[in-house]
View 1 (spheres, rainbow, N blue to C red):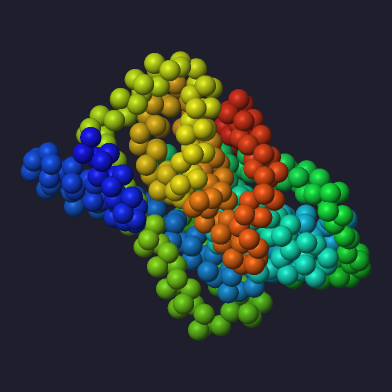
View 2 (view 1 turned 90 degrees about the horizontal axis):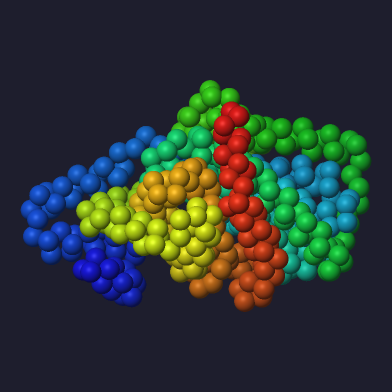
Length: 423
């Protein structure tokens, strides 16, 4: 009871989620009068970060900083434009394809929306696309980042759930491609409705030049995904190699990055990593407390009383996650939900942890583009100078497409576990 009341109280006062988690755990310890728990508090905080898989997190954030500074995103956008620009609505497809390629590098929705808003929206507006529709397509493309590897959410889930992050990346490939295909259909429908224009076709020489220019940039996602799928490197090692490749490409190939850009990139990555890592450390202490309170067993008993079907459990879970995603960001939600519900999903209902992880991360991604929290939604609205209310309405077809893919994954677990089994 003391845990729940203090948790709600901290949130009502607007206390940041990391301090809320750590503070609630401390209140519980003092209320229990258990001196041993107090002595273990610092150890639990440290233990939350004592995980090799977490090394991938700052490295992927650093990779995003180098990629942004080195002009890599612009080359990937130009590559897609060279082949699809002349198709009716081609720039919209180019936007989505570039988002998919960026997702294979960044793994962060907000970072991806920020970069693509600068690259794609002005280009689409100049070509005659409505600004609000252009921003909506860009924001929707950000939904690919948490599913297509390397995904920050998968890294967090893998660390909290203590399962191999590389296998989790593989589990996200097919769902990510399904969402991409569903979004292609949505864009085709939007193109008919809004009368999307077509650009002039590029010559063969221009296309060859675009391919040659983008080859160094394309090496980066190939390094990440290829090394993981081939078993040559862990996600952490692939992120380190890809970061080095991004520096070399930005400095010596595209020459858009200077030595002066390197230190700010490290500083920004360190700042962003510190925020997330402190949240994970605080969540470890909070998870320790709720386990001590036997909350997972209580939830398991309650869920079993409601249903014995794994499918019904996952459908109920999706409703819970949809509501939770509207009021909190995905990372805190993962940290709160996984210690409680993963043991129930695997132990009571026999659900594969990788299947559970894909469903959970995909669902929580929707919260990034839904009010009232929706950091991705408000980032896109701010970058694109469009009202968030208008953007929310335009994103409804993309939400419905994502929900359809989510239901497919719930009813057919092989879509998330099959490729992992083959590889």
